[in-house]
Image (cartoon, rainbow, N blue to C red):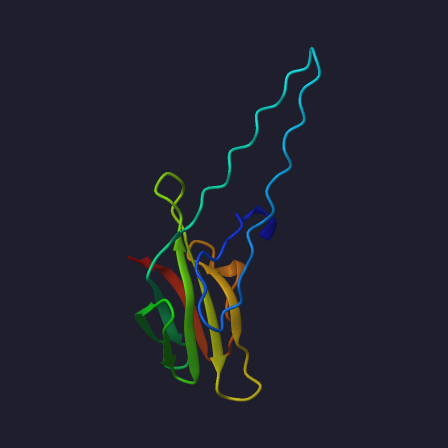
Length: 144
């Protein structure tokens, strides 16, 4: 299923965040031989647009208390034993289907508890999510 998602490119880097490279450019099209039609080149994938903050829903599963927070890119928030750092938050351009993606680094101060480091998608949270017995973190969107 991950192969169906468009590639995400980190447009800005932060201190301590791993830089990601854009995929290599496609090879130039070979000229068509006489009498053969050349297939049109596929349009380039639309670029994601960076936003300054991520909107998250944080859930304490034991207390059943959801909290909605907005965290600026480059900042972090503490929720229970979790520390959630937002490294990037990008949205799709207005001419394609709406979606948001955030690069989050989530750590738990309790030893042996799971963390998370990667992209979360607002429209497809099950693709990449924190799997924690006490807390749930969901991306709602990005704000500008």
